[in-house]
Image 1 (cartoon, rainbow, N blue to C red):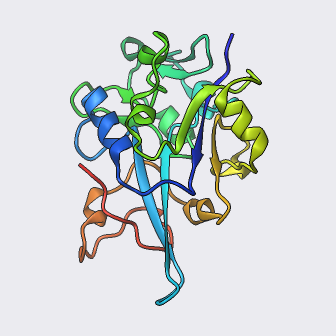
Image 2: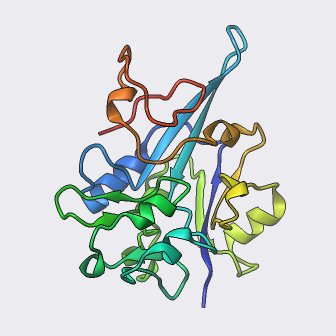
Length: 220
């Protein structure tokens, strides 16, 4: 049995949002919520200002709080480790949303069930790559079996220093990052779901838990 995971190289992400657009198209994700998105943060001042692009998604954690919190058994871990939500068993109690430290889960306003990234389990079960990985023009996302020493992801993990988002949460994410500039530290209090009003230039609203940097405009 594989242990599927994803490695995101922040050195090569250009913030094009091809990943989040591909995800929206693959799952027909409603406006204002996200399975996968890209945040950006800015550091420094002119002429030495720097912008970091940070793709974020469900981490498919080894110690998944959502899995433990769901009282109906709607959230399960499938054979290769992806965590998915069985829509028929979800009663929208939101316990999973409260438990997730990454804000990865949202309530679909049309289907009225909890939803999140699934690592495109319907695609990977057929030997395909997740939609976000396939769409990335910079190939900054690598997906595969973390336990297979011959896999590209395992080789790149061995060859680089990697980190995870919010390691203090103790969830053991299967989404890892190459982050030599420590951009992830700016997202300590941030989650995947955002208030879309806060993303519009000049808007006085701010997103709940926004990081201390420019939040960046998100695709709808």
